[in-house]
Image 1 (cartoon, rainbow, N blue to C red):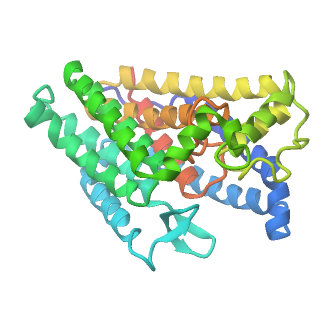
Image 2: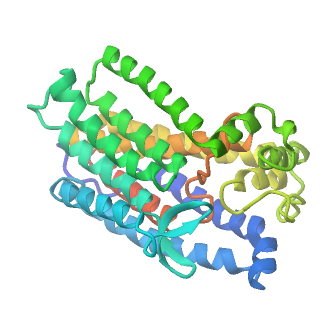
Length: 365
């Protein structure tokens, strides 16, 4: 293990801060109309975003200074706490329903999403568990099934809310850790087939999910219902062209694109800043993922390597799903764009996780 560096990966830090700055600007631009209509203050969303950005940056600075190996000691406690939150959020009168899902804990407009905490808690615990030198993950029954059972339990609790998008991100990041830890491809192949069958079952057992699929395949079959979000998103992206209509000049944020400051903020960004603006954001995410994976490959500590893979995987999967939904390549799932979209607990937890990644980069070769 190398001695602690004087500073974390500079390019990784630049990507994080650049995306966060773009996000704050776009939250104001995309959400000002809705904020003024609903709250009488066009700065409502951006003021809250600035507050959580400052809170998240403080958390990122804190976690970037703590030796990442310290989290190995507290990973079990963190996971148990996350399971506790996932259970109590399901209790009527305690969990708050927003957007049709009982996935919030809080008072009035302030709240946290326990499923966001579970993403990081699961990554921490799996990284510790699977990095043990005597753990044989190549064995299907003794090595692979125990972590899969734990992941399945967390995914099941998230689906009871229900929140398929967040559950998919947690599941994807966890499986990236399992793959990196050395699980056999044939085992993962069989599990993938079972996962596809289970995914189809989830869709068929919930009529609203089936409608989302049909709306995704042919949004014009129900332009005012299931296809509305995708159609309005594409109406925003199309006119943006190469250079965009100009910052603040979006037309689709005037009550056409639903929740333009959260799930569909990229469509407003593409409308105002065009192909060039959208490409810059995607390149920044690509650079962040590249630098993060470079850290994972060059750090000599097994726990740190798996932890870096999980954090980078969490970011990458969330970006792919969000952009895929916005441009019509995936069904609507309700996933925010990391560091860009408006959100309190999601932004704070993401910056906290990236602070851990920055600390791991101090030990990379």
